[in-house]
Length: 324
Image (tube, rainbow, N blue to C red):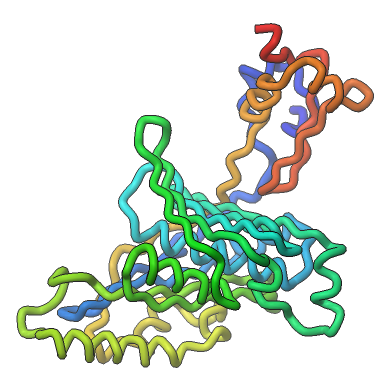
């Protein structure tokens, strides 16, 4: 069997081969929870080995890799709170040395993402040995959260200017200004002895009376939210990223005295969706001159931004849109 990244004898419109990417599933990648009779719900996200599989596809500086890992964990956690069919994405575009940061997660938990970095522009930020902030790497620009449910449904998108030093602070700005939702977000990503790990804790204040006990007046609700924030603030990044500390035990450490209730966990998986057939369709949209310009020695190579695999197509077999 030929490699799916090499030229294939099967016509591209019939070739649906997927590339040889890792087949990784984290069964309890997202653990939703709530506090009984209190206006608090949340999700604990732990990517485990999936983080290493996704992040090591790209040869970035560790500072950029950590930022990408935080974006992956955040996206998985936000997607898990929505009822949708399709994909939910986070995109940061700026004028800094990391002009593009992208992560998306499907309703089934298929996760992918990448950060595009300019090594020459990044070098001055790394010269003194300190880790540059997300703001320094991204620069001026915007943060977009998009829920895409396909061509038959309206696409929802929320945009906010990049404000804050960290991705956590940028996300907080979005929720305060666009969603008007009280939230607490903690993101962590680091290279451990077991490889790269990424995680997130997201808690939200439930609006109105949803999930709140009848005996909880406004003062009691305010106090319950402040208590949840204080407890969440004791969580360390090391605890978030510790494979030896099960997520359920971590949450019980934080919230067991506050009426912790665990909801059904959600799986996360390696989610790059590239294929020869998909990329062949992209090539078919170019004119003949463009295709000729792309070809080197009669072969066109397309590299997936997410998994960094290069797919090779024989130029002679690619028909352009001009030819019908």
